[in-house]
Length: 217
Image: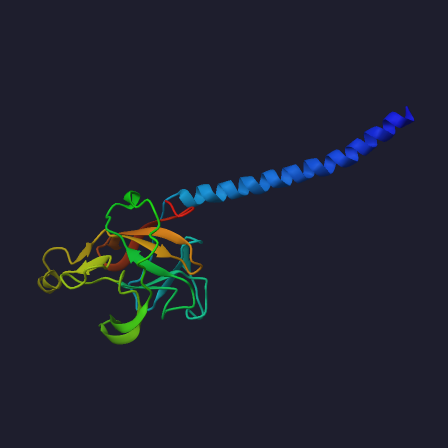
């Protein structure tokens, strides 16, 4: 009888650590699968960039973030100042962010992450402020909007004729789909869906995005 009790205790001493290890591995796998499923979901956001300051956004957090030093911080991925856009890479930050414009205008039609062809932020002259005045700084020439007929890659165009006459739409969303790498180098696809508020005021970029998994969307 004593032998049976001893063998039972030894069995439990071996079995319990195995069960605990198994539960830990199962929980870790479940968390990883949940994270992958979350990344597969299409997300959307709107940023109020109608003022004079840059507004910073984190794709991972899915919200606007406060950044003390954009040049050294990795807490942000993309930033907006009216129709201008900058990414956390190149001349704008120490991150790995870069972008490529695809030939698609439907988000779901972009299936894979391009291997090459990306561009980083560079120094240039922007028209910032109210009223706008020439300002030197870094931005993404690929995503930033511009004047209709002149800007061919940006997410929004400004119709100067309609702005002057007050007739017709001033802002036009191009619907281009971009593939962007975050500050940490994680790829996602991005499409802008609007630029105006419910009152028709410009400077409210709205967009949808989805992270890639294993090079595919």
